[in-house]
Amino acid sequence: MGGKRRHQAPYPERLGGDLTKQIGIFNPQYKAARRVTFLIDKEGKVVEMQKDREAIDPSSVVTSCERRKLKG
Image 1: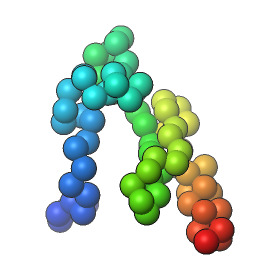
Image 2: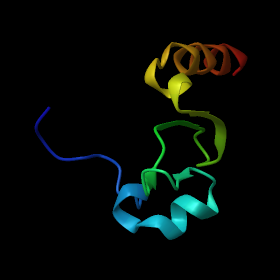
Image 3: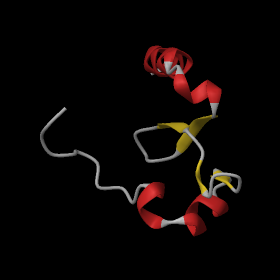
């Protein structure tokens, strides 16, 4: 996947352990962030977060997106 990234957010892997510890995704065993999928609404609020094995398969986040879209 080439091209520019659309999002300019400070991704946790770029900021080191401090941010990942603050938001609860730091894995001390590997000294790195855990695998995480965030669902962020239009206002920038995190409305769902999946960690570890749940984050590997994004289907439940996709379902959440579809439900939110139907609501409004």
